[in-house]
Length: 334
Image (cartoon, helix red, strand yellow):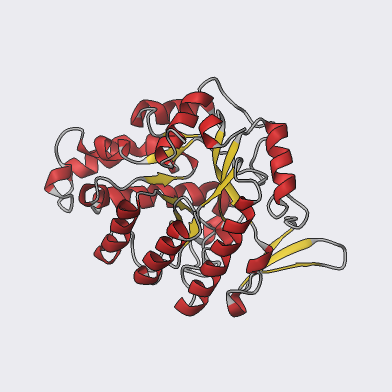
């Protein structure tokens, strides 16, 4: 295959773990190890993820990743940072050092299979100026295709402090991807109710995605930056189910800006966002498509993750989703 231009199935939800980044966030890690019984662990600050084997898996072995892509029928994949290592709440110096090392390593990783892989930059969002500098370096010097941040940041993502950050994406003509992480790794602890049964992953992620989308729209980010392309993971969480209630609030609540009160304005803003299709349920995907349309849906798998299906489901709309991904990634005609 010559590259993304010849690809039908393009997976934009695929995280990588890079050996070169171990210890690059100082005391926050990250660090990989094994207990005496060979149980693997992954440490970030005081948090330990137990039982997930990164070493020798597609997360860290790029040749094995491509082999598994072949097995799954995935033609091209865009690699992104591990959600456990956004490091948006640690001191700026450690975050900047980590992101620089991560992006250098990711660029070298995808360069081993340039016809099958591309990458998205980790960004130190706690310092918007440094985040702009790292995005610019990653795109112009390293050849990465966009930037990647978490849903939880020290400032809300509609804060005017981020306007120049969003302008940089437009100027560089690259997309911004947003994905949640378990609350409390290096930021606020989150809802204690979500600490059982993996609810921080199962419910918390959807909660974060829905909240950040509402924040972006109510806070006017798509309105102020109409040429900015933002892609949200997991179909935007619960956004399709909650769209009517959120739209009603835009029309009725006193804090809603005037431009958002017009009939259909909230729905129009939702349709300006991109969404990946990793939602595990054809009914949920059908509702998302009904609410926001199909023009900004892109295929995603969380490749090799705990919630990737045993057999990757590639539907009859794979070519359409692939064409959408090429538009989002500025790769049309490549």
